[in-house]
Amino acid sequence: MKTLILAGGMGTRLAEETAIRPKPMVEIGGKPILWHLMNIYAAHGFAEFVVALGYKGEAIKEYFLNFHALNANLTVDLTTGRHTSQPGAPVPWVVHLVDTGAQTQTGGRIKRLEAWLGEDDTFFMTYGDGLGNVDLQALYAFHKRHGKLATITAVRPPARFGGLSLEGDEVVRFDEKPQTGEGWINGGFFVLDRRVLDYISGDATLWELDPLEKLARDGQLHAFRHEGFWQPMDTLREKHLLETLWESGRAPWKVWP
Image 1 (cartoon, rainbow, N blue to C red):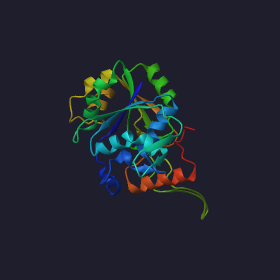
Image 2 (cartoon, one colour):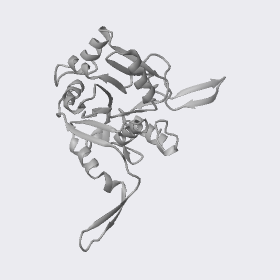
Image 3 (cartoon, rainbow, N blue to C red):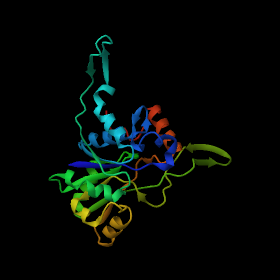
Image 4 (tube, rainbow, N blue to C red):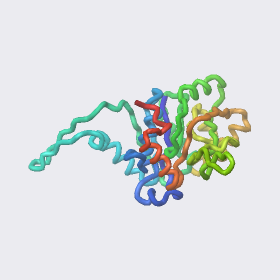
């Protein structure tokens, strides 16, 4: 079962980083956020990826073309230019990198990947800029049980500001960025039947508008409620939050060994 990852947007709200690289290549702990996301899926047994490229997609191609060299010890003979590598543990992923156009919208990118689904009738789809400790096996089982065309992972929105717990005037607990506990929003991490492609008209289609709205009206969209950690990386502040969690050794999305 394949995982489609939308990695072609410009990431304008993170311009400090995305002026020189696509957002999925922005690093958390020295690794692209795309690497973290793929590790989440692979930890649950889903290790074949189809990545929809667009803005600065060549940077993502270069990363995976040089993946072994970047993640191995190297010996270079500067006299001859010859080099040998001593790779670590193998990474059993298959990664398809597909140019889906610089200006194509999210729905259009999904539609352009249809041929890459092969024989698969069901596939995962997510965005290349959000992390969470979603139980993907449970998500997939939920999708199979309800039998509809689409499952969206519903998450609690993170609060904009830190949360305080008070006893009198004393702060007894501070949470840097808690979830609000109010309402549900689109957290990505979709499971989709390939028939959802019929809801997408072309490159200009935003997945989050007509297709999802029509699927909901048709009774074909169910929500998998995720109460655990979820965090997008839309701003430099959110990038720093993820970085801090990773460096602390307490990154909730690290579900792999």
